[in-house]
Structures are given as C-alpha cells and as structure tokens.
Length: 259
Length: 289
Ligand code: SF4
Image (cartoon, rainbow over all chains, first blue to last red; front, side, top):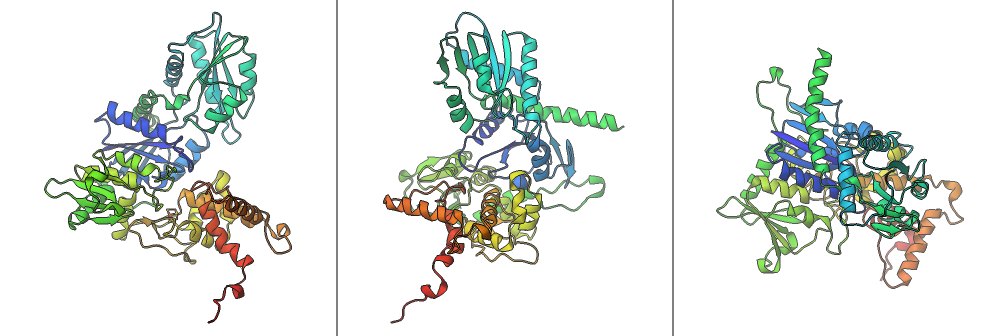
C-alpha cells in the first residue's frame, strides 16, 4: 500500500492555514485516484500532528510532501524531527518514507504563479502600456531561503519573457513591497503573494500598507491587480503529486550515487 | 515514539500495520455492542445488516433522524469537527465542544476509520495501541527538549509550572483525552488525568503553546511584583476581567489565544496561581453554623 502525507503549518486560531492542505488533498484523491491508497493531512499546529500521523497510516510506502514554499526552518528542522526522518529516504519499522522538497523551489511553480495571474486578470481591463508582475514574499531572519525562493521564481518567469517587468518585494526584508509597487514603472502592476495560504498578512496588512481597495485598485498612474496567494491555487495539487513522484527518482539517483 | 514491529531479518514476512489492526479492532469493538459505544463526545453504532456504521453526538442519542442533518460521506466529519456550536474554530479536537445536530452514516470500517480520524485525529490508533500496552509515552521534559525557535523557552518551565499548565489545559473540563504522560520519569503528573477513551501520549501543540505563555509568566521575576505580590500580567488580567464583566457579558478569547487575558485556559491557570494570593486559605474556610 502507498500513502501520501501532506504536511501543513496549521494554526491554533483559524482554518486559513489548514484549508488549502485539505483542499489539495481532496483534489489529489480525485484527480489521482489509485495512485495512493491513503492521502492524509497533518500539521505542525493542528491535529493530526506530524508526531502522530504515521501511527494512523496503514501503508508501508509513504511519501511526505511539505506544503511549504521554501526550504528552511520547517522543511529542514521541524518536519524531519517531528516525523523522525533521517533524510530523503527513511527506512523504519518495515516502512519506507520518502521526503519531498518544498513546493516553491519546484520547476512547476512558475506555471502555478502564471495560472494565478490568468485567473486574476480574466475579464478585467488593463491599461495600455507596460505590465509588471510583482512577486511578494515574506522574508524572515529565521528562514534565510524564504527570500531566495521568490527571486528564483521571478528569474524563471523573467526568462519566459511574458511580462515587461518582473520584480520582487517583501514584508520583512528589503526591498519593501510598498516601495516596489509604488516605484515600478508600469501602467499595470500584478501583485501575487508567494505564500502558501491566506492569512492576516494577505487579508489585512498588505491591502492596508499598499492602500488596496480589493482585487483592482486604480491609481492616477497605474492599476494594481492583487491576487490570492499561489499556495491556494488548485494546480498546487498537481505540484504536490509531481513532488511526490520525484522522490522516487531522487531515491534512484541516491542509490546510483552510492554504488 | 511509534509502535515498532519486531525486526525481521531478510524482510520476507509482511510488515505489521498497527493502523490496519486498529481500524479492524475498533470496528470489532463497535460491532460487539448493538446499542453503540461512546468515544470522546460521539457514539458509534454498527448498523444492523449492512456492515455500515452510524456516528452522532452523544447528546443526540435518541433524537429522531428528521431533527438531525444527515451526512454519508466520511470526510463530512471534518466539517462537523471544525467549528463549535457558536461558530468558533476548534484547534483541539478533543475539546469537549463538538457541535450537536448531525448524524453521519458510513458504509464500512475503512470509511469509519476516515471519519474517526477527522473527529478525533489518530484517536483510534492510539486507543488500540494503548489497549495493547504498545503506546509509547513521551513525557514533558523529552517533548520540551525537542522544541526549537519560539518554543525553546518551554525547556525552562519549572516542574510546578508544568503541573499547573496541565491542570489548566488537560483536565476533562477542557480536554477529553486521558493524559498519560508525566513531567519526567520521576515526577508524575498531578492533574486529574481524565476518564476518556482517547489516550494522550505526549503534550500537544496547544499545551506547548500554553506552556510557553506560563514560562513567560514565571519570568516576571520577584522584582516585577508589587507590594501585595501581584505581577504585571496578573494585574492586566484582573483589569481585563473587571472591564469585561462591567459590560454585562464576558466575551472570552479564542480557545488557544493564550496571549489574551480572557482565555479560558489562561484563566484556569490564574485560578490555580492567582486566586490563592488574593484569597489566602484561612479566608476560604467554610463558615460555621
Ligand atoms: S496535552 Fe493536554 S490538552 Fe493536549 S491533547 Fe493531551 S490532554 Fe489534551
């Protein structure tokens, strides 16, 4: 039997954080029926905890995919520790547990970001002139890679040449998002949070700091389009599956490297 | 932490899945008792004849079906378990605030297992391991030693702080799990461990979060106490309580919002540590006659 475990952060206060994990799990059960016998959610701050999720899973082949954007504190310390993982592949109690990388660094991520943009702009009027895509990251001291993953995705999208400009801005590090949005030289600014879930920032602090009035904000010199976080997009379910499949290849690669 | 199956050299024999055993054992347990069995705040009953099962709130036993909202998808259990009657988010599924008014019928033991894991996540697996004497327990100090980041400070919580946090957080009034862990191997928990069917093998994340808060209270050291021995946070809580009560209705903070004064578990902790300061023992002796 095979199981897929999707790990989310979770929250003690509301369902914002766990909801996308449940939704992606439901989509995986639906779209990839038969690939996994069990698709189970678990969390850092909700139940089932990472600590106990393996107790309730029946399968002997388990794949763990973190629903996190960047490599860092959670994916490198907390998740392996709580799940008792030794690395990309763990053999324990007759079980094989494969641990996938985070979603944000995956090569499929730019596609999800662009789908998010398409959804946002559908049926909306753009100004004549240039269009800039601005990716918004959290950026913290605890997780040095959280900025890197936003730059990585910006670069990958830039290479495709679909926007006149692709910029990045952050909440907790430079460049501050408000400055980027104000300063960017484009008539249309498409702002997409590279976050895994909705929350206090996406709903309150960001709209407040940037004086946004909703999905579309008209300014004298530009129109700002504000999208939902990438992590809640239904295509993330496909990203999770790709990540899960990739762990097998990674294992084969590791085996080759050893021999 | 996990139940281990004996090492099998060569690995020829199939792996033992304690989760599959738990699923079967739970169904068997329910099948044995036609009127149904309580588990947390629900009653699970085998439906005669078709191999299916019915779940409902223990307070809804005997209520006609027509008065309940019927579900037959095991994953509907997640929505049922999500909010309290009052619409508050339930971060701890073993809190005694499961809403009433629903009935869930599922087709077999697998569907029952899925539903149970949304109502009481990993509850059936732990129930089974505990009954077999195979549930591994992690005491507070081991759990704290693992914490990092903003939770690292719980390592310095005093034994007394752990005991009071457990009384405030884990007793049946606020959590229906049976608390099996101790402070450390030599220091048993003083809290009432509870009578429930669902074992708690290790401090949960809600507990660790409250423990962090209590550790911050402990750090308000002697220098911060006023002439009658009250700490700044104790005075803040008392003021908030008085102000709220003066409006005629006390609106409590959310269940795990421990930074807010009017949180039930935070108040339970204050009852243990603040009330004795305000009302010394001799004052509470019952009046004679
Ligand atoms: S640690 Fe306490 S509050 Fe948390 S599940 Fe166990 S008994 Fe309940």
